[in-house]
Length: 356
Image (cartoon, rainbow, N blue to C red; front, side):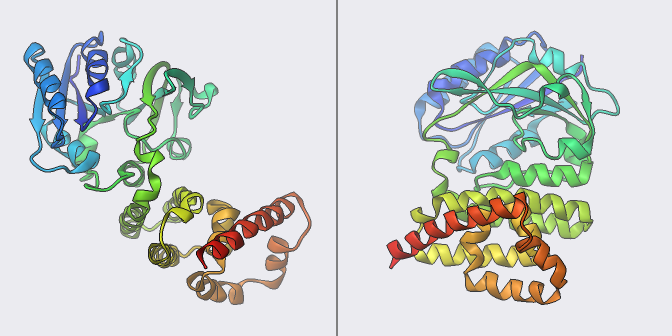
């Protein structure tokens, strides 16, 4: 029975921490190394619970940061302390639904399988909801890289081989939100993993109103730094597949168009100029922009001078017939695209009027 290291970052999660830790220590797979990293939480309750569990279970390693490094920094600390052949991550406000999860999943590892992908349920208003992040036809099957690369980038629903972290110098960005996205992209292009989908057991992700995803307007600038790091990884390993995958992940920036009214004009200009600089480094065409980032995000940025200047070059190089096909030819795609453009343009005009 190989050892599994489980890294649990803790920061202001004491209302849920006991439920989380109980779901781990009660697993039927007993060869666990549970590394709890208190990320300099100012809440005494967090430390009391962590110490209590460390005293009653000798499999628990308790580490406390003197500086808050966010989830990425806490995970890095856990990785450095880990001694198991396998490693996984559990957010301390989440929990494991089945006590056989690790037993069923670890046993699926072979030399040819790089990660175990665990099915997930969302806890929303105290009700468990299926995520549909994994297609049911993929449950309990081996999935190759070309398919797994499009799955949810969160690391808490995966079990990794520890040596892949060491061999490929994999780490998490610290003091930034959305670090999972950057990590998953770099993991994909370095490991090209084959995964086993463990669909019969569940990790429970607790959706909170105070979570990062519900306060995303505060962290829009983090996206720039996240994608800058991803572009650096791409530039070290330039392939067309890696470029297209990066553009696809850039689609996460659509969130900006839903939160644009929550940021001031100075932040808006900074974000747009930075985003366009990154897009230019990725050599994104107008067609790719629309296809991967979506019409709403395209429309949001299109009339900005940075985008206009960037795509003047693209337009001049595009074949006239191809340009006509993409933007003029009457078919389902262009009809929906035009309809979306009109709807979003109306929103943008309202936004500009509001700003003035």
